[in-house]
Length: 387
Ligand SMILES: *Cc1c(COP(=O)(O)O)cnc(C)c1O
Image (cartoon, rainbow, N blue to C red):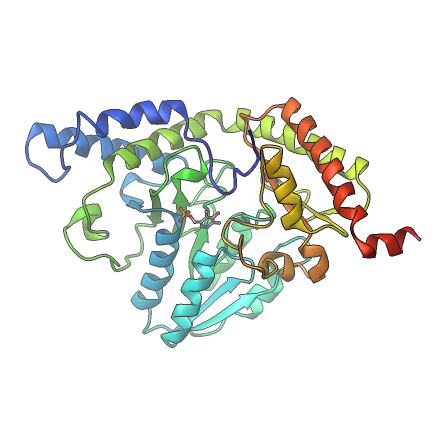
């Protein structure tokens, strides 16, 4: 198998698995207990909090563990719009956010909130002048993702944060694709809230965090016990949290090395595909892009059929994002780039990790070349062009 779907999820690192195991068998104490055995779990959770915080320049007390990116996104937006409802009910986001943000916004609209969905340019960047113009007296929050999960475009966080500060707005960012992959400093970028998820950085599934800047307070969305300083009830997912901490530390230690490896593989993949296959384009920014992301649209090719051919060769890839897979709608991200619908259907996302090899890239390019030609032989539009 060749795994090129690291934006959907990543392989759990061996070190992470080893670190988690004792908390699944021997050390099963509930961190809320008042005996030494429980305290071992409690200490492990606090150590992980430190590891997760340090990756983004946050304080330990600003990290709240959740069940993952989706919960963090829901919590951030719902709680901020609740907390500051006296100031106003307007929120600004973009058209290319993850569904965890967009669906939460749809729910907020039903509750009477007003949402502005910013356009993006052809590379997927929000337009700063449009962002500034959309700010109103009753605007509470700007929520813009750090990097896009489909096309890898990295937004200008620093500029957005500065704008938010100037207008006294709360700034949330969905950093699920970026956390542990590229450097992020929450203080430098004036970020008040940040969502992250362990399984996108070689940690376990079902655990993530919301960073909440200590200058703001937001209500809890899950009521119950007093865990997470009363902000998120429920007995802690101790093995998951421990795994998240180790994954964060490994990501911090290896960030440059992983990045170099990913860039080399990704750039090689892009170069070969662009040179060796006609009628193909790269989606997203080439300059400000996640190091592991490649996203192509092949003209006269059905992406779903391409995926099936790749799968039959043991290659795991994705059409757009895992979330829109199965639906026949073209990706909202590609539509926001202004791409024609037919072209959007011919899209292939390949996301590498540092564990991949150049050899694998060669196999994948050959298979794509062969599959694309095969599919194009059956395409009548292609036949017209070839005339
Ligand atoms: C994966 C992802 C999420 C959802 O995270 P889960 O932990 O799977 O709930 C949210 N936003 C982005 C950008 C993602 O890539």
